[in-house]
Length: 463
Ligand code: SF4
Image 1: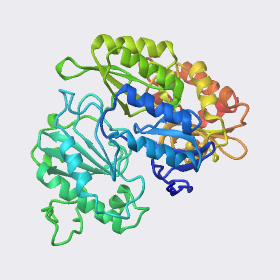
Image 2: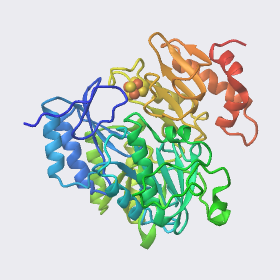
Image 3: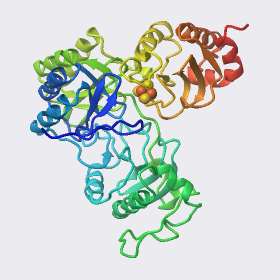
């Protein structure tokens, strides 16, 4: 039997062949680049029951994660999954929106560029394990809220905005490029990142480059970049190639928990397990029903969802079935507005039972969870489930729970709660938002307006 490299350090990236140790055993990630069938997902679930503890995560980026593996069972899972001939990702994560190629509202098809970048990056070694490139052609379901080291966003049929670090909103615009320059430019940037070491991320390129400083590239580079054309843009990128602002894409990323109308009469429906984690048996039941309804394909997708593709009637029927079986099926489900990591006991770094807290919060604070922000419930300050800032976060620490506003899990808290009082504290904050909310104001805006001092007073029950 082949020994697998075990990934033990925090911050590492689990993979099918490099499982990561967690509180409930080894965790192996299955990353797919194309749709699979419901039958294939059901088979993966059966493998999770055979080799793992039967729990499956769907990550925020749409990766499947099989939990509870052992040193003996992980290689067996690896071999059996590979024998299934699934469209597994191999090499650098180059992600495209899940409806791409089926979405008539897409500005440009990102798949040829994504494939070219994937291929051209194969020889680059020494990149950070979680290095991610997003190629987003626009459309109804975008990847704007996912962090990316390098992000390409279509601003015209053959023009792409290149951004570095962060989400689409927080990233820095690097340039707007003709399609013919995109692959070489991205490869130049990846090589530069590799030369900075395996901790370097896209945001480090932003720090390392002065405004309008050219990216150093070798004379053999065919990128065609010049000092004038490659740099952090300081002007509206839509002006750089004469594209009109109306051609640029908005930043709004729709929720996957919708019914989508696609090309050629195809429909898709987004369904997800609460807090991104399901029992394999429940997913098997869902997949069996999908197959019975004639649904042929599905994709694990962003926001811990599964997108099922089929006729309108099949998608609607499956959505009703999933709702009746406890899955998240709607944008109004408060559980879909909580980002909770695995927490205790599944992760050995966790100080709190995140899913328990999140389940209570969704039942008790539904009006606070209006979709304007993700409530971040994290077992420790690492903040795996929501690496970007959140309007409100609850973070487990050694002796209590910290509450953070407008920040990341590791940022300065505005208040603390005892473990036992966590949900009651959150209820007090929800009560405050309810009483303070102005007409038309959403929860995120209300929380920001209230501010840390008053939130702290409410959290601790002070008048
Ligand atoms: S954020 Fe959650 S899943 Fe990540 S290491 Fe901390 S407790 Fe574990």
